[in-house]
Length: 217
Ligand SMILES: Cc1ncc(COP(=O)(O)OP(=O)(O)O)c(N)n1
Ligand SMILES: Cc1ncsc1CCOP(=O)(O)O
Ligand SMILES: [Mg+2]
Image 1 (tube, helix red, strand yellow):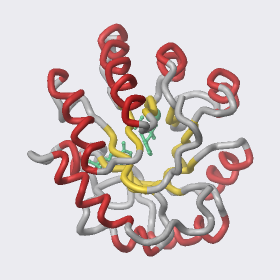
Image 2 (tube, helix red, strand yellow):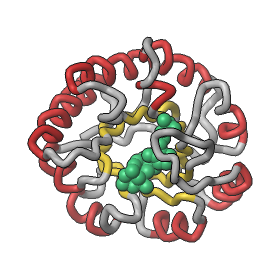
Image 3 (tube, protein in one colour):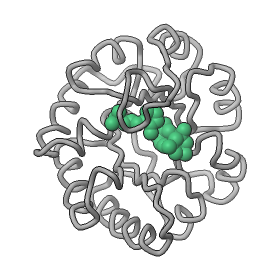
Image 4 (cartoon, rainbow, N blue to C red):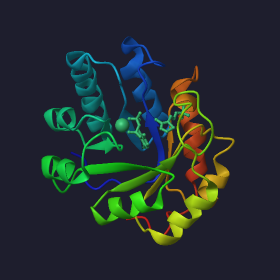
């Protein structure tokens, strides 16, 4: 468990269709070396034993570097390995169940898609961050609903809770998201799909040189 990490910066998300299992650990280490502030393990494959094996290795590496590892979808896995938290979407169970299972110090993130009402419920329920997207078209999830810059601005105006943007984000299209008040950029392809993962992560980290905004916890 990480001690109240600041949720601001690059949030690098793994994807088992993009990274070979044999390269996963080194890729995540490279992302952290490049400046990723948070890692999510996202793996839709049904092999629970394999996922646990990989998640445990990532958790050890992330803990050693002081970076929280968030498990996508799978609350039970997050609890079993003592991960820093879990990310839940509309098909991944209730926020209250995640909090009851993982405890007060866990980081629980909630997908809000393009819905402010869902964000209100998540914030009221104690989410540690709210995620909106897809903010740009993405090959990883081509069917994802789109969230506008206007929605991000409205969310920033309403919530002090850290705001995450996801979907099609690259270092060269991220500026409007940051200007809209987003705290974390959640990225798969533009980090783990790049030949030099460390350099790719560093390009994102360089976008966060301004002082931490007052709303950040
Ligand atoms: C940081 C972050 N934001 C959104 C998502 C998407 O979650 P979900 O809608 O549950 O979709 P899957 O990722 O499970 O396909 C996310 N994983 N992380
Ligand atoms: C999981 C998810 N949810 C909304 S978009 C997306 C995929 C983001 O991947 P990329 O950063 O490669 O566009
Ligand atoms: Mg999910």
